[in-house]
Image (cartoon, rainbow, N blue to C red):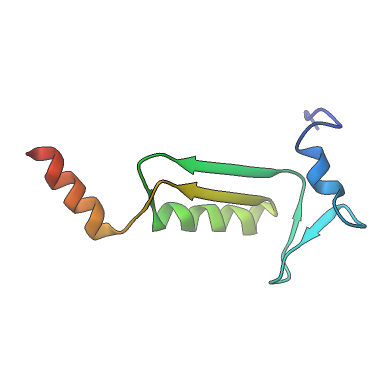
Length: 83
């Protein structure tokens, strides 16, 4: 792997007694955590992509935002920009 050993992300894999982190739903995540923070809003479809990547890559992603944007909110924001 191209990752340096002993870095900040390496410590997450060493929590507990094994190299995997188990969550309440039974999923196991290996390696580091990715933190995604979107300033200005995060759509539910973008949040779903984070979840899909978590399941496919067995990596934990923590997503946050200043607000969560519904499709109606997004269209309203576009309308506001046009004025």
